[in-house]
Amino acid sequence: MIPVIPKTAGVRLRWALLFFLHLGVLPSVSCRTGPGETTGGGNSPTDNLRQQLVALKHREKALERETALARNPAPYLLANLSGQSVEFKAKGHTLRSFKIKRLVAGPATFPDVALALAEVKPIQKTDRPRIKPGEGEAATAKAVEKNLWGLDRMPLDYDLICRDGMILEIRALPSEQSGAAPVQFIKTLYRRTLDRYRRGKTTDRNPSRTIQLWLDENDSRLLFWSLPKQLSIVIIQIGKSLD
Amino acid sequence: MKRRRLWKCFFIVFCAALAPAALVLYFQVRQIPAAASKDAVDPAIAAMDEAALRKQISLTEEKLRRLDRRMVQLFPADPVVLVDSAANQICLIRNSKIEIQDKCSTGTGFELTDEGGNRTWTFDTPRGYFRVTGKVANPVWIRPDWSFIEEGEPIPKKREDRVQANVLGDYAIAFGNGYFIHGTLYTRLLGTSVTHGCIRVGDETLKKIYKAVRTGTAIWIY
Image 1: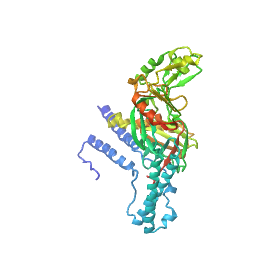
Image 2: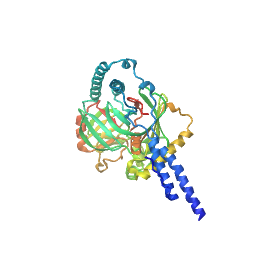
Image 3: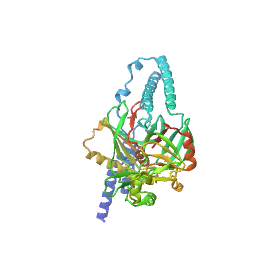
Image 4: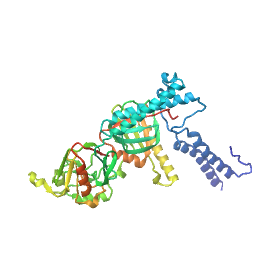
């Protein structure tokens, strides 16, 4: 229903109504279907069965890939784009699980093989605290109390650069505990704008070889903290595309 | 008065123009690759009738169940040690069930450089997959160079001068490169990151883990 602005309403009220109309209309225009939702309806039962089988085949393929990787005891990272999750696993056992809050990916089809992590590149490097010779263990304990190093000091934004050139950009969105809704909104806006600015400055990156995963800031730090030197990354996308 | 009204107008126009931009950025749609090749239905599937599709679905579901079972079976039934270095928690898992769970202490992540600036040590607990390489009861600590440098003491030349007893607790479990899971005198610090890379555990928990593991037991640190 389109609200009608009465002619008798004051100029101020008209402006206010127009402004709120803006707020109401835009999100509904810009939000599209979410994960798992299917567009279009009215398919025949055979078409539905066909779609179900295709989805099952994708899942089978993904599971086969993961099983092959899980035979090796080394931990691996499973980025399930359709399931909107990132799991840090070993031998099929989930050690840590993170929710993908937002996903931006290039128009590439993802590689069917496991990617080997070559380098973890933080956007902003945090320096480790240094102990001076002779300070002793007591000084170290004091420094620990001051929380000079730990999860809170881990970078929020970083790139996981794989050997074949594929890049997983991990970016952080404010956590729900980081403040009231308006504060989170402003923080989110700031981080996305900052990321756009950074992307604008980076020219050497191939967008079709880049996937950007936005996690909660706590998850982003925790993932960075957990990363071993050698890591395999599997990207799976089960079923239909989300657009 | 006119000026004030002008400012008000300007503010409203500014908000009206900025809000859509901000909202578009905020609610920006996730973009997933079109995955055209993945969405394209396999010709074999496209040619199937309803009965054939149902049969195929049933077969694929059965295969998925088998794969799921296989995946679960990949995790060792033998005891394994998991160390959550962020939460400073250690647990022993046997037959996919947590048998022991307790707090521990892991590396500070601090850096130490010697006076000459030639050598640097990072006191991190390594992350990844490891295996138990040895077990020692009543261990003694052979103090490495960094321990002397940290305390501002001269580095001894004789090995005997490096030996320190009763600091590693009753047991030590080696997992390579000089790293151990061992006991501690500083039990009040358990649950915090205070070590030089080793994993410190309370006496009771250490005893249980020591008895449960053997050489080759898997350790995952994350």
